[in-house]
Amino acid sequence: MGKNHEEMEKKVKILITGGAGFIGSNLCDYFLEKGYAVTCLDNFATGHRHNIEHLLQNENFELIEGDIRNLEDCKKAAEGVTYVLHQAALGSVPRSIEDPVTSNEVNISGFLNMLVAARDAGIKRFVYAASSSTYGDSENLPKVEKIIGKPLSPYAITKYVNELYADIFSKTYGLETIGLRYFNVFGRRQDPNGAYAAVIPLFVKQLMMHENPIINGDGSQSRDFTYIDNVIQMNELAMLTNDTEAINTVYNTAFGDRTTLNDLVKELKLNLTFYDPEINEVNVIYGPSRVGDISHSLADISKAKLLLGYNPKYSLKEGLREAISWYWENLK
Image 1: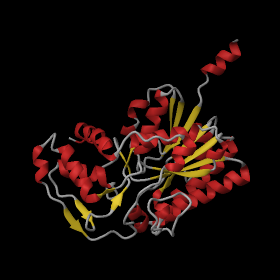
Image 2: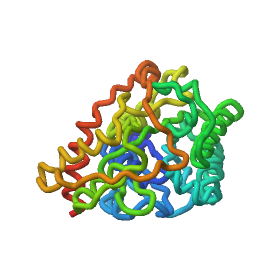
Image 3: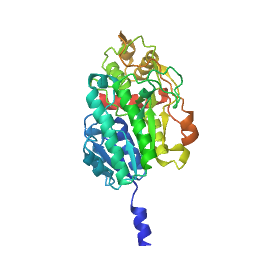
Image 4: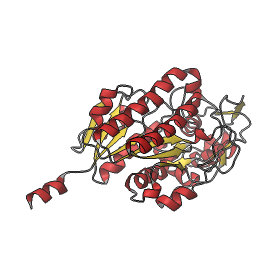
């Protein structure tokens, strides 16, 4: 009786790398609410302490300040863990073009360290953030997992190499891995500041300040914008699936619809003028196209629906309503 009771009391532990970042901190919140014990590993290079401040008093939450480039930090974080949700990375195509060496060290060497630590700790499953940038110069639309092109940036190379390493670790060491190719994720806590801010939080901040957003190119380029709660759903499904056919592979993680940047700005204005009518008068400025950018991105999500039972709840419009409400409360 006592032993069973102890086993029931012992919570399943999840390691979330990059847990103080935008996606990572949302995952920390979600899984703590679901009753898991959560360890967050972060070096605060791009994550923020304020994203997890509210969790520090939670007895089921542990923060390890460390760097995935340090194998010992990875091994320490992986102790006693059942699942790894690996979010730690240096994102941004432009950042990788400016500084390919650091992107490589974090995204490839750091990723390999985490795989080794997971293997040595006997982790049940390693779910990791892959990227739609892996599709590279492939002109196929919608993007289907098995058809990729050549990478268009150092960042894209690093994320593709992650998939190759994960595949080798599955085949060679029997480590269960699932890669989630994220498509333009947005939502609460996504940082609008800094040189490499993502387009939605950046434009929201600029419009709120009555500054002109700058679109690189003519605004006809399109993206599959994906709300954070859809991404949380995919991480949970990937972590818990018992279908052997569903593991040791990669999935598009998206809504399955595309929006041009011009239409995105219209939608942002529509939502923001509810709070401040003057925002409607703020105009867009068009600049030169960005090196390494793809013109169009749209995910085929049928594989995730079929094998994982994925059912994204939030379209761009629904997600923007939630996100803008959050930004209005938190950016002012």
